[in-house]
Length: 363
Image (cartoon, rainbow, N blue to C red):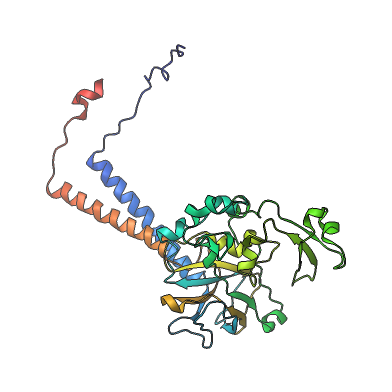
């Protein structure tokens, strides 16, 4: 079919061919320096003056808090981490855990997951073997989810102490994930069903609506005391996340647990933080905030460390000066290159020919 004869279809549109002269380059470099250096300075100033951050290492070499170290996984040891504010601080306050020397960015580690399995597909061993190597099964049980990332989940339990709770503070752990992760990347396994049970005397088929669920299990929500019945498919041959990390993951949530979703978004550097919750309260100078931590995640074997961080956020994020420094570095480099070109221009000038005489300009 013959296209319509237009300037566009016949590729006769006028084009733009800028002539990158020395004056244009000088202007570009100096404008970049003028813009980037002040922006970086403002970001760093905000990080230092507006963001208030407190950090205590509770496990690893030279910890700030004693009695919180463990040498084996799932030790279930408890300890208290207490912060005292040296200035007034306005909420919300964000609670992070920080790990050092944990290489979530290792190539094999990053690849060891099954996206289809995390999206709820009921896959068999052969369908996840290549994706999840080297952690696929636990003895004869297929792991769901499988892979290195899911099965090295950070399972320390962080909660406010009774003293902090009695002061009216609450740790909110809802809404701590990226919206896309929470809605598009993680779903309960296909076939999972659950429902609230009005009484423990009721049968599974009565509560869940089918005789297929007669061998269901029960779960009582520790925060509300509500009883639920639930049923997982292939429960006799598959080990689900709530069974792998029973102290942290509710069977009603499974892979939709927000702490787990945050963990599955791997960090780009070996030292990183992940959001655990937030406290929407204000504090005065001299106030204390205490956390109880149940220690399960072991770091001694790889010379790592764990820290608890509480911080406010500014308009450019946390107290990190990395973004501001990046702007300043680019601005300073642009300034140096601009000065070098200007010196060359002034000390060793080179006449510029008449670009109108260039042959291609008139084609």
